[in-house]
View 1 (cartoon, rainbow, N blue to C red):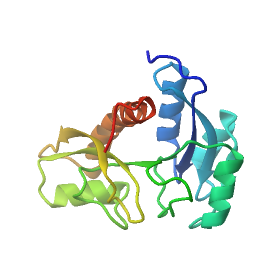
View 2 (cartoon, rainbow, N blue to C red; view 1 turned 135 degrees about the horizontal axis):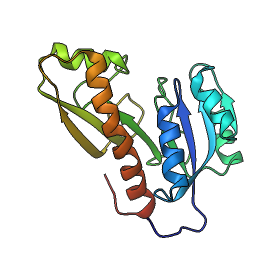
View 3 (cartoon, rainbow, N blue to C red; view 1 turned 180 degrees about the vertical axis):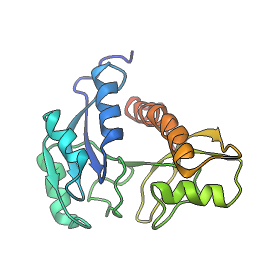
View 4 (tube, rainbow, N blue to C red; view 1 turned 120 degrees about the vertical axis):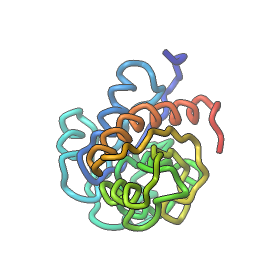
Length: 195
């Protein structure tokens, strides 16, 4: 358990798919393991993640494609957001005004390897296996104006097994993501993690 924070940090979770990472963070918050609240969910398209956010009562905005920077800044201020948390968001996000160093992402590989445009989901795991890597994992990092190039906060590693399919590796890496993201976010919110 972490000490109580008053008030807890207000997170905006950005997603493009299933919302599994958002659900994990919500469960960690409910368990008292993450001193935060999910105050807004932004999706790049209609998806299962939007349905899951509605089920939990989170305010949801669907913004197709790349968000307009001014619209985004206004939306985040309207909801008094402290941190932007990318959770399977596949659009390059312009860093909103006033949010330098407060946009966080998790990537399903060990950056700087296997990052960049088009490197998400099974594309990443397929590339890792095809490259003959013996190790993979996940990376939590702060975002800048490029894909997957900001300062690394935390990495967790796992083996790539000889007969792994991309789906096998994805499952193993996602189990690490479930631990890494709450851990890194907790460190940021408590001031114990710095890039």
